[in-house]
Image (cartoon, rainbow over all chains, first blue to last red; front, top):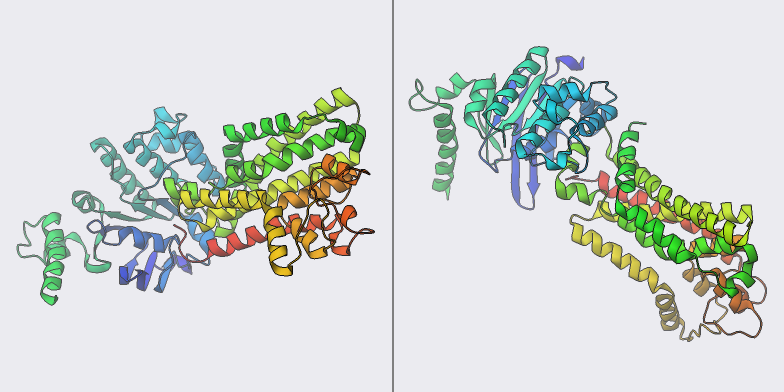
Length: 251
Length: 293
């Protein structure tokens, strides 16, 4: 049964561009029902990893499985069950928010009412407005509504908090929580540390294409010098700095 | 089909663009040119000739411009990340794009054709239904070939500038096609080509009719029954009229009898189909390979 398999499973995945390892021998497992925070500084390889999970990009080596399937061979089934909020996306100018959500719903053959989803992300009063005129925060909300179509089993959210005001951030956090309560696995990437610690069951820290630490917030805290009062920020800086120092010495 | 929402979205993109209707308008304005030569050539069927004149000049570049952005545009804005997140294979994405753009361009061009037919009906009276329908089919085939080329260009390039350069390169190569072919012919065989009195060379004439617009003219001239040539119908007629010298390549003028079998006008249907199938197949190959972003 595929439902007992992890939501996401990456084995020794490497993605090279020319000679640069954007993702370097990555092993990653996200269990069903988890809220997993994929944390790392800009350029760590988070979006590349997400691209590999969704078959936007193809790994140089290694294997990826999503919901027990091969995202390349079974792309229709995988994408049918996954909701995606991409990073640095663009919307279709001249199309309303409703048309954006309806487009996804029609392709997924789902009868979700776009207006209800848009209300849920806080765009209830902009349902029929041209998305080309949206502010950054509204774009982000619309993209989240598109990801929520069809109650996906897995939500892949790439930097879901970027461009949002505090109300928006809170709304997204609530939605992540609601979706997780419904039974969905949530995988999101972020470099906003505070959000990750508020939402996630488990956290993986990516640095220069490698997973340098993984665990619950407490487990990660214990790896730092002053575990008791360490914030997520301390943990993060310490973990990624240590790597940078290591490399400095190696050179 | 899974990709029909995508095709509908592409169709809407084309038909809500000004470009589609400028194309239709240009085809009508350029196509409608009553001439004595045209009337002498085909009589009331000159109405169908109007369609040939307008489509031959404007449809190829118009359809290309309406389709070359289809994928590269989404790459540039980043909306491709939503497109690729849909439950569609990459092949289905291409089919949806190509079909939707074709239906959009086809709708605009059929509208232009019907307007020209209406004008012709009022000006000259009824015309032959079969040659009209044949021309309509050939026009739609030309439209699909050009959309296929446009989507192909959009798929294999990574930047809008490159794609636009590709479109104009195609446009100029086909515009100067007969000059390119005759120069190559002379370079290879050493025989100079005088368009007023072209050598009876099968390969030369075949090469001239391998472009989509060349094949379109051959087909429509065949339906209009004026002669076997890639030129516009009234030029073909003038070339074949006794005592007139025109610089046009017409099979009947160069060959005694019909020329070799492979110059049969019906084979231009195959040429157009190849122009539909090959770009789509190549685009599919490229798009399915490696990274899609």
